[in-house]
Image (cartoon, rainbow, N blue to C red; front, side, top):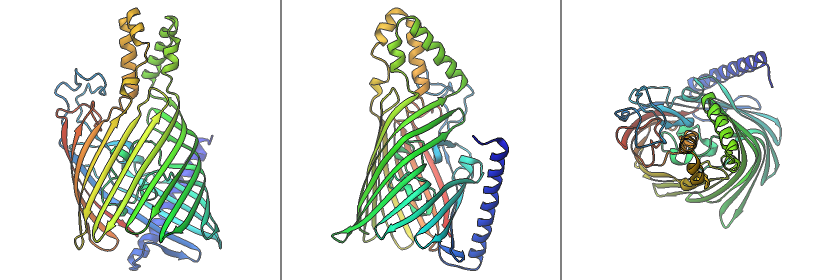
Length: 442
């Protein structure tokens, strides 16, 4: 564990390095270098990306702040305007324009250490996630073992989604943010470990196989999740017209925190249940150590200006935590510099009937009060999982230059369960979100 002084020094180093890279990137842009991968010195290559954008929703809080018919919604005693869950698993969009919502930037620098060995670092700064504190997102060694195989060691992107390798680079995909119904299913973007990538050509198409193993950590305001024994694979097969992709990942999740109040409630509940002879319920409800599997299937189609993307994902957990299924389909057509598109998306919970222990009726026969307390505690734990939702998103992307695009989106989102992807209960179950952005690579 680093000391506070060491942490401060590391942040200072990252900040200074980020400023140095930004200065070089601005210099390259000012000189008119029309490429996104530039050598600033022999053996050192620099590239970067940036997004500036915002959005707002017309959602209003439920008239009495909390929906009395919904025991699963988050408490909103102050009647705050519900925020919508978007970029980086943060509630960031409400009825005010906040340009911190989508604004982010990043620099990637590569050092040619040997002929076949490259060191890569990526620094990302985001308003919604880190309040613009530079974050060393990637740092890994890349060794080209032979023409078809390369080895990675260090911290790198988890290759689980269709857009994983360019998740922060909004320029690379048609939406302002990837569909939340799929891309917020796991609180993990990067991992530390090892990876092997293999590429081969079969019948004029390229087959890619990606094996990976390691660990990851996710810190939130009141909780920490440690992903251990993490391993998986991703495979794709296709060409410039059609690519099919599948991935699978498994890990053990260790949860801690969740807020002092909830921790006290859990401790009190465990004692009550044990005293009443219901220790089997305690074992059933243990969500602090959870084995999870995550599977995705996706495709990308490009044909004479028509483009379509689709992805299906399923997360299964061996605990009371939710098993979740999500999917989206995007279709669009390139007309000169314009790319209008439409996306249909949805997310559902698949084990809602299994979240409460089967011994609940027996407990209710002993004590209605304790049974109700158990139900409320489970709902408190899972309130962020009750985000069953469907949406239709209509957007347009306009190519200002070869490396700068502007985007505008209109989304109609419907809460299917509880408050959906909103932080608190909304007055209407169907709400509108409008977003816009300016995105570039350099």
